[in-house]
Image (cartoon, rainbow, N blue to C red; front, side, top):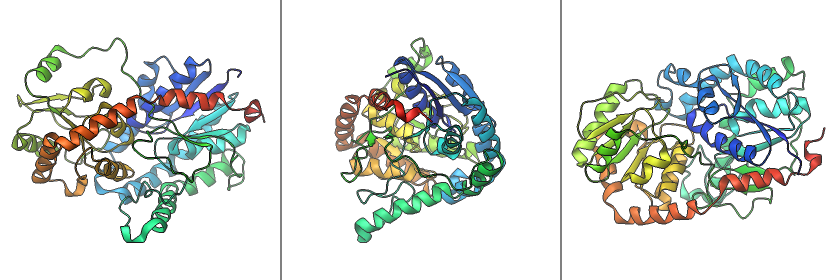
Length: 419
C-alpha cells in the first residue's frame, strides 16, 4: 500500500491525546506522513515525540480549571459547560482544521475529533476514519451505553440498547448547533452531513478483555487493544521517588488526572486522611486537578509520572476512570479503585467492578474519608482483586493495539482515499 498523508484530530485532555500519539507513531513507523491537530496545551507533549502538530485554539487545561468544578458536578454540568465552549470555538476549529488538513489523504479521530473532522473531511472529499477510545457509535444490548452504565437490570437487553441511543444523543447534543452553523458559515456545506461510508473501518482503542466485542457488530468494527504510549527512552525517575517506592511495602497511586476540583486543598486533605486511616503509603499525582503538595513522609507528590513505569510497582491505583488511565491500570495488572467524576468515567468504573479487578466505584459526589478508606483497604487487601488484575494485565499485554490499528489503515483500498 502506498504511503498516505494522515491527519489525526484529538481535541481532548492529555489522557485523551496520548493514545492518539501512540497511534500516530505507529502509522509514522509504517511509512505514512502523520500530522496531529490537538489543543495548544498538548503541543509540547506531541512535539516531544517527534511528531508534527497543528495547534487548535484554546487551552483545555485552563478551560477545565475555570469551569467552576463542572466535572465534579457530574455529566449534565459537563455537557452544559461543553455547550458553551463549543459555541465559542467550533467555527474557529473548523477553519484551523480546514487549513491544516489541505492535501491529506484521510482524517481520523474519536468523538472529540469527529466534532470538526467529519465535516472538514467532507469538504476536502477525503474519508474520515473513526478511531474511538470508548465503545460508541454502535448500539448493542451486550452492555450499557457509556453515559448510562447503571441501566436497571429488569430493563434487560432493550434497556441496554436504549442506553446507547441516549448516550449518543447526550454526547452530540452540546455540539450540534455549533457544528451545523460551522458547516454552513465556514465550510459552505449543508447543515446536515452526508451519509457516512459504511464500508470504512471503525477502530476501538481498548481491549476486548475489558469490553468484549459484541457478536452483532459488523466486520468493519475492530477492537484493536489499547494504544499505549510508552515513556520516552531517555526518561528516568528521580532518586527520591525510587527511594520512596523501595523503602517499604508497595504504595498506592492516587490521582484524578485532568479532573479539576473547586477546592484542591480540601480534596488533598480527604485523600491523605484516607491514606493514613488505611495504613498505606501513596504516590499522589497532582495532575490538572491541582491536588496540593503536602508534608507527609508517607506520601510522595508529583505532578505526573509515566503510567507504564509507575503503575506496575503499585499495590493499587485510585483514579478517576478516564479511558486512558483505566487502560494503563488494567495493563499494569494491578487492582483499581475508580472515583468517577463525569461522562464515560462511571462506565469504566463499572467495568472494573464487573471484571473483579477492583471494588465498586465511588462517585465523586459521594466521596468521603470513610468511603475512600474502605475502598483503598479493599483494593489493596483483597487477593481476588489482585489475582484477577494480574491475569487481566497479562492478557492485555499480549495484544498489539497499535499494530492492529495500523494494519487496518494499511488494508484500506486506494479508492478509499480518492475523491
